[in-house]
Image (cartoon, rainbow, N blue to C red; front, side, top):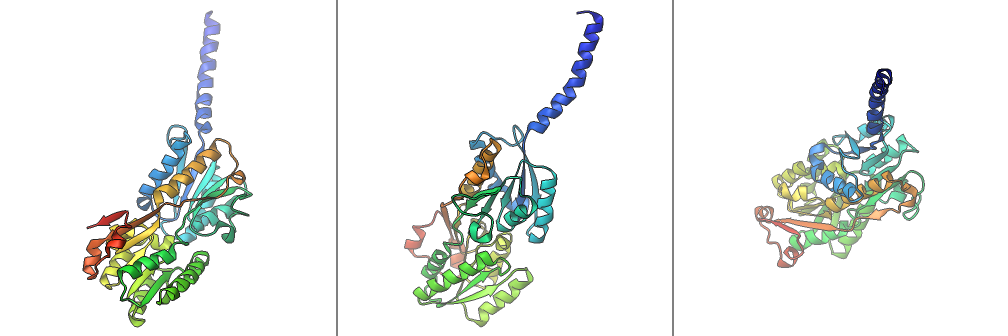
Length: 327
C-alpha cells in the first residue's frame, strides 16, 4: 500500500471507529423501569425481572440497558418520572404497579408499556380487553385482590375468637379498595363475622386507623393489597405488634418484619413474567398481540414468633398450608 493510500485508510478508519462505536451503543435497547417504591424494596423483584429477560436472551449490561426511576412511595411523582423516560426515548417502559401503569399510559401512546397490576386492567382503563389489549400496553396481573377473602379465612382460623375484623384499604385507589371491601364484606358475612373498613392513604392516617381498631373492638386486621402499604410493611408490622392486633398482609416482607402472616402472589413469579414480556417486545413482538398474563403462584408465610407474642396457637391445618414458617 502506498504511503498516501495508507494515510487515507488510517484516517478513514479513525473517523469511522467513533461512529461505529456510537452505533453499537445506540443499538443496545434501553428499558425504562418505573417503580412506585424505593430501590431497596425491589432487590428481589428486580432479580426476577432480569431472570425473565434472560429467558428471552436479554442480559442487562450485555445487550440491553435498564434506566430506573423510583417514586419512593409518592405516587404524585409518577407522571414526571414517566415523562422523563419518554424523553429519554426508551425502547419500552416496564411499569410496576397500577399507578405507575396509569402514569406511563398518560405519558406515551407510542412507546410499548409492560405493566404489572393487582387491579383489573380493563376496569382501570389500561387495555381494551384481556385477550386483545390493543394500543401500546400489555402486562401481567396477580391474584392479590381476588384472594382477599382467603386472607380473611386464614386469619379467622388462627384467631377464631375474634368476631369483629377490620380491613385497612387505601381509598385513593378505588379500583382496588372497592372490590376488596365488597368481597371481604361478603366473606365476613359467610363466616359470621362483622367487618369494619378503615381508610389510610398517608402515614398520619395510621394512628387514626389503629385507634379506631380499639373503638370498634376489632380482634384482628386484614391489610388490603396496595403499594402504599407494601412500601411500609415494616412500619405496619411494628404497629400491629405495638397494638397487639393479629394481622395478615399480602407480601412476605410483612411477615419477615414481625407481622403474623402474609398470603399473596409470588413476587418472583410476577416480575419474571413481566421481564419475559419485556424481552418479547424487544425482539419485535407487538404489545397488542400479547394477551394479559396472570401470575397464579401464591406464597403463605407464618411467623410463629409473632403468634407467640399474641398468645396464639396456629392450628396444624394452617401450618400445613404454609410455604415458610418463621420460628
